[in-house]
Length: 202
Image (cartoon, rainbow, N blue to C red; front, side, top):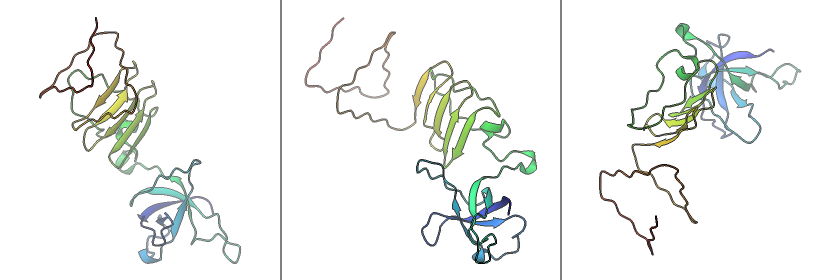
């Protein structure tokens, strides 16, 4: 059998084998959900696991044989995502296609520009509230779209670390910061510093 389009119907493998249940479309439209097979994933090298979610469209094939030597439809293999364009809008992140409403983070005064997006040429991944962008021009950003926290670097090399919550830096060794320009500290609350010894020089 050649590759077939399918939709993910469940992801909680009852045997704990990390498989996903699939329904071929449209061939298995009337098949009872309880009888649909569980498919293993074709994983990338390096022990990386990228799970599907219910409703994902995928490509599957049937590499195993049954007792009569025919493709075993009870042991499908998910080989990758299936692209579609329901209503004319591609089933990819809006940042990748340039269509639909992409993520718009809240403005931060003084923050560098985000990476410039170029639809159809950038690497974009958006799942589980994590948006990762690797722009064609060399920019990078990873954002938690639920909280608004972002880490990134634009095409000019400007780096930013932005977040509405707390930031903790815990280092077991020395910390050295070298700045070619000015340093500005702004705090909306008290400024506290603790050290065994302070030294300042000009």
